[in-house]
Amino acid sequence: MEKVLFSEEQRHTQWWLWLILFATLMAVLGPFSYGIYVQEVLGKPYGDNPISTAGLIVLGVFSTLIMVFVIILAAKIRLIIKITNEGLFFSYPPIYNKLKKISPEEIDRYEIKNYRAIRHFGGHGIKRNRRYGQAYIVSGNSGLQLYFKNGKKLLLGTQRKQALMYAMDKMMEKLNQ
Image 1 (tube, rainbow, N blue to C red):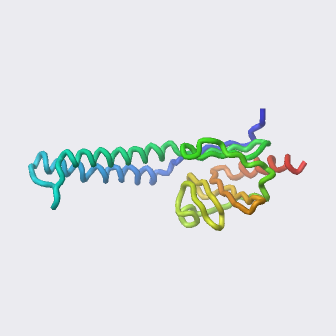
Image 2: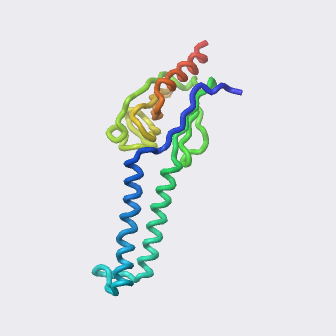
Image 3: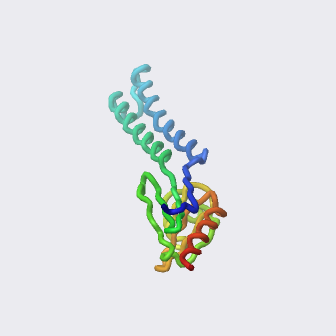
């Protein structure tokens, strides 16, 4: 059995993200609920070109289901990083469920980078940037920047940069022996 040198699982825990998602859900529900109230309780048409109450209900339910799906997806997304003597493994479920392996032989060099997710990548998630290459970011501002022998780059966000760097050093040390 291979020895695990490092393991980390990150989830979206930013309070502002959940605030935005739930505020958006309420913003979606609000106009439909108000429209149904105006048409059914007050007996007045809602808007300049009113839709039927049944139409409002169908649109409201459909819009709400989409928002609930987005909230569930945000709750399930996580970044998993694992380092063993065999290599670095990562996945980004539920988008990428299978652990992707990066063997030590593929890596030219690596370092811990500080970044600004919005400025450098346009936000959190799976991103691509000319300077840093592909990035997998869930939260924070530190990541492991990998430079591959084929010229490609990969940035993996981390909350445990010292432990990650120690594990990378140990993994690469095995390659050089």
